[in-house]
Image 1 (cartoon, rainbow over the protein chains, first blue to last red):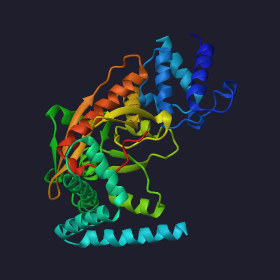
Image 2 (image 1 turned 45 degrees about the vertical axis):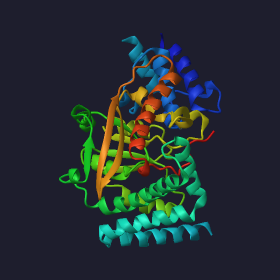
Image 3 (image 1 turned 180 degrees about the horizontal axis):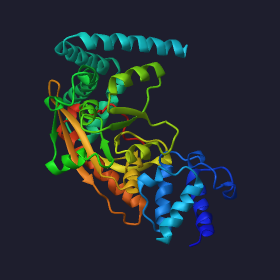
Image 4 (image 1 turned 120 degrees about the horizontal axis):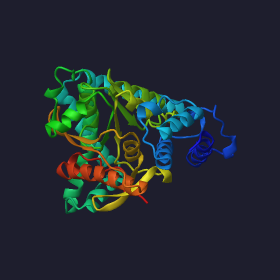
Length: 82
Length: 295
């Protein structure tokens, strides 16, 4: 899976769980994750979706270091390439 | 007007807390139970919620016994407030076991004490949950997620009584969605109550409690599945004057089945069953006055 595909799928998952009013194309890589409209439960559902969809296992210590959407894309790209 | 009312409540609370801090514990505890008795008899609507819940749970029969148990649970709650204030400066790392006994297999307790990774604790409104959290905070950092009081002055004051060096209270309404994950990543023990009604549709799961369906938070189950951190159920019952037993079960380590909502239900029901088991053992210490079973 290339980075572009990861980005596209991730944005769709973000849109589903973050309750963003904006169109999925409005989600930019430089946007901060904690400004995407998540609450403390929907962020957990989102993380679950990421693991389920990309077939990766995330670590909470890694997740809390991620600030932007780009960080998450890079993380998934690293996990799926492994 | 609202601010004035809040300030009056705050003033009254300061007076009460000040008295509790200096009065002999025996007097304070007896006074607290008297207040609970009064509240039960002066608030018939709330008393009815308790007796209706107890009746539906099938724990006791007959109106006199229902009212006796209902009154006892109110007294348990007011006593809990007094106990929390009294023990706040008494419980220390070198003496917490004089107050709290752990009822758990040694390996379960050893895993709970393991500070190399975070842990999640689900608890219920029985006995004295604050003292249990304080005792645990003698072993590792504990963050308790709570629902703030509507009165901000009271909230700040009560939390200064409930918190401690290693014991932090975190409002469930704080806006950073990653805050709980950060605490767990730092190795904290995150404690949440799971036996309150949840109104928000996306945040709840339907479980059975005392044979009747009710809504519970799905957050603990989701937290466990996402972080894979050990999940414990802990409930602290009062066993004497300023003596408590913390009943500890777990850790739950749920393997995902691929069906998220079935897993959420399975985990949450397992935790709820554990709390019910302890509440059946100490029914007079359970918070029956909460409207738990709602549509």
